[in-house]
Length: 213
Image (cartoon, rainbow, N blue to C red; front, side, top):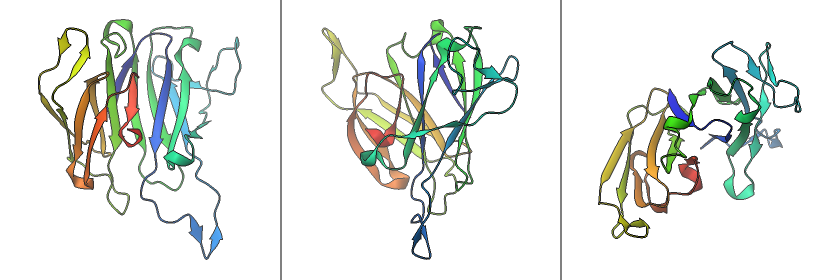
């Protein structure tokens, strides 16, 4: 389970990646495209966010609601997103359970959104690098290492340099990982289990999917 923190009222972009799936055909006949959805449950009362309800009506409802996720585009095939406008929650401070899934993918993506300005990634100038690692049969890869090494020489603002630290996290039960890094930082990102080794710049965003770097 991944936990992410955001300030009150932020537009939170939730990302879901479908990787290394078999060719989307059956008997030479194309099948419909993937249709991942996003469920957002407010923990305080168990109500679900319904993104089809327009303001000023309260968008949190009793029945479960699946919000359709949108593809990023042809250059980022297999990556989908949903923008959750937390400002529409009249409770302000709130925690949410998020489940993103697609009918053809057996594993579900679960995370917790915690809302509060005192610990937000934005307030700390950090970006949460996240992703999911699976094997060729779409089984989650638990315990896979993800390593970020600061590339010399790195400065993030005038008069501020960053030491050459090496950071490492490991994927959880669902193959998920999350790593908080300073925005604007240049790092060598390595995920040995999938042969990933790339020099990247951490974007000016609260979260980022590693496949988009």
